[in-house]
Image (tube, rainbow, N blue to C red; front, side):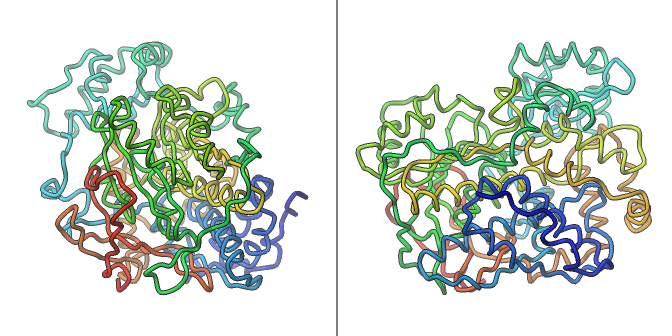
Length: 568
């Protein structure tokens, strides 16, 4: 395939007065220059015709120097192009229109903060009545950014799913019921972290296999061996696993949706937790796929993230170390089209379910499979086997330092919201759509790979807003936001960001962006963000409401439709 021509959109397409829109077209140009070879050639004309709708003619939405809206809108345009190419296989419409709503794309980046269950958002003190568990403040702050022994050096502990391990590592108890004050908890933990250098923390962290990391600047990350490896990678990859399987046409099954859904009849098994991996499954469910999210009863998850992340899916529990549950899982595999792997490279392989092992389990059916793997550090480079989550990627890649410097500080600050999670989820969705398209056209099986660090690299390569724009953002947004410091938690950063953005950009919180439906699993109404993309001749949306992990039986039978989702 010929490389995508540079500067196809930005030059002369839009008014210089619309900074956000200009930046979005420029981001799309850059993205296609990096990733066009990973896409079906047929999708590129659709991407070129994508319309970005926005009423914003002024400053960016987020109090951040990073071009988050532009990055996610560009990714959503590519996702839409891939989806439109699939739609063409059912009914060819080379001129079909595509719209990406910039306001909704921006809201998508903090979906879990906008979601509610029983009219309560994630910060509501009583929301735990709908959830299986809620962690306590001291233990939550075991996942946080702290100063170290050497001035100017910072380390991000990450014990959110294994708090006791992280706290014990620095000499603290796993539980401290006496510590309930936010600032006191931070002081106690940071005082212990400050006893160590970043090198010592890295060594201690490696020994107990925790997801902590030194906070690097972008220029420092780029010269690491791992940074060098990822800089030679596109934002995502789609590689051929085997070429023996014949083409597998899309079923385009009948759906209860108002119009055709491109993935109706496609079956997806999601083996993921937290946000980024589940965002891939959520994206495929939005296009009509039947998605079963399989989680282990022995692994922790964040309960509120399931409100948004499990939208459109069934959610079942299986212990893949138990023979009976393995048999159930392997029965599900026989009719699956896509496997989503959100664990560290090799984790599922050790259970017998890596890409090549899955191929062996389904080879008799003569229909290929698409395996999409997402993780923190990527699938190449010396750090590829390290555990990690969104804040870890943001710290190691330079995103946190960029946020802090952009706020006028000389210290890193974890940026507001899990935006890298949702951006990575979108890249995984693109990889899955591409793999399915190639399977339908050419046969074979495909491996898609992407990571949080690869999203951050794409984001950072778009550059930062200049000092003039940052001065405008500091003038427009609450002083309280710019008083944040390195050791403020993601919850605190998100809370202050939401407060200032509700005032400065109320359009992001408009009811037109939200949908609501009763959830049997949560026994309450659930409100979530509507889809970002509209593609002429198709319908994207969710046919079933959200539910907590483990709510459903692990079966492809009895896929109910929540009629309220069609009306919402």
